[in-house]
Amino acid sequence: MAAKLCWKPIGRPGFAGQKRDKLVAHWDETYGQGNWKIMHEVQGQYYDWLDALIQFYEQAYYVFLQQHEDILNWLCSIASDVYDSNVTNVHSGLDYNIQEGTSNHMQDIAIRRVVQRLGRKFEGSELLQIRGWRSKGARLSPGVVPFHEPTWILQPELQSWWKPHTVESFWQSNKIMLVQQPFSQENEA
Image (cartoon, rainbow, N blue to C red):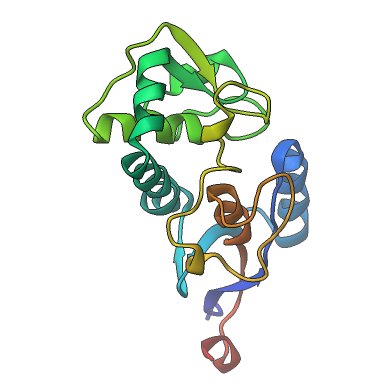
């Protein structure tokens, strides 16, 4: 009879960035391919990548742009579209699953989706980069945009290039690694 397995949280992996592929290979070697996964924990519940993106990451942008009509008006008046690390990011459109390169780009997709949700559209002529502190669209970086429910960010907040209490802080701080382990009464507690 096969042992029952359960998913057990083992830590907070934090920001992967361009190390992502190497980390995935390491985790596959350490835990076995298919025996680990990254989820986001919010108020004791675990959410997969896409659900966390839509329910929390994107929602933070929605709340921010809804509350800052001046920034929404500025964005829609100057931008023809937005991108993160490469102009090819625009090919993702509204689909978070369309990713290219060594790191994910989600903020551009979130912004496109939120602009649409708010009944607006890009009417400008500029392809606006929203990555980096010096880009014209830096005010829309996930490292700057405040997370709408800061008490949901796991403590201690992880620190890196982003500001505290931001969308990026939530995304990195609430990222949890789970591994499959044999079920026991201890796992239930």
